[in-house]
Length: 80
Image (cartoon, rainbow, N blue to C red; front, top):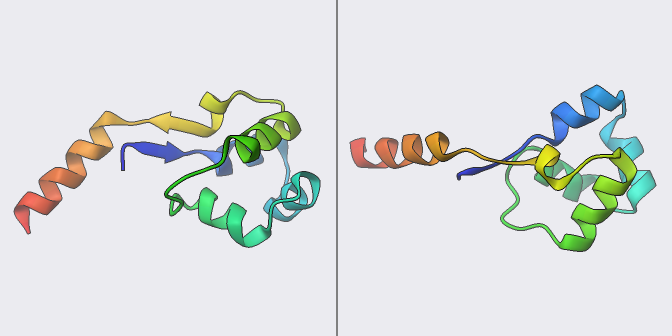
């Protein structure tokens, strides 16, 4: 997928655990874990807003477009 989630980096910079973030924003630990590991297929704007508010960041600090990653996945599929 061309969109990467860098929530782990932002949490590390803020010295905050995923559990602490979960408690602060009211999103389950399981759902944040899915988002953090890049397994989420979608994210609600309300969730993104709560994360940005609590972490003091912009959506672009959490979500990154990586065109190279998408190309590598297509090359892997073509090789299979």
